[in-house]
Length: 115
Image (cartoon, rainbow, N blue to C red; front, side, top):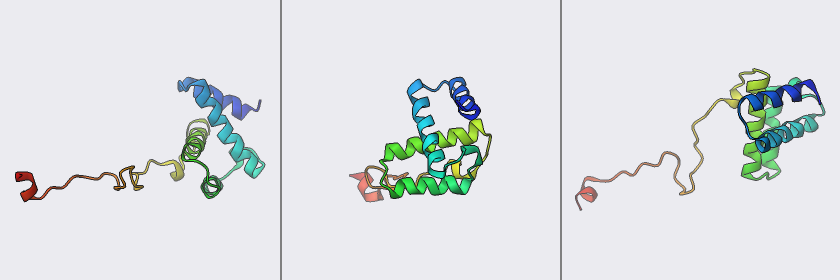
C-alpha cells in the first residue's frame, strides 16, 4: 500500500466514512491514476478536470460520475490539502426532475390566488 493511499484511508476513517464509501473513493482515485499512469499527487487540477469530462463523454452513469467526483474531491481537499476551484461548491443550474431549473418558485398572479 502506498503512503498516499494509507493516508487517504486514515483521513476517511477519521471523517467517519463507511467502509463501502472508502472502497469506492479509493477506486475513483485508482481510476484517475490509471488514466494518467502516475501518482494522483502529481496530477494537475486541469488533468483532473479533463478526466472527469472524459468520464462524462464515455457515458458514465450519474452515480458513477458523482462517486468519482466526490472521491477525487476528498483526496485533493482533505488528504492533499489543495483548494482547487474545480471542487468549489456551485449552485446547481441543471434541471430538476420536474424539468424546472433550481429553484423553481411557484409564482401566482393576483387573480389566481383569489380563486
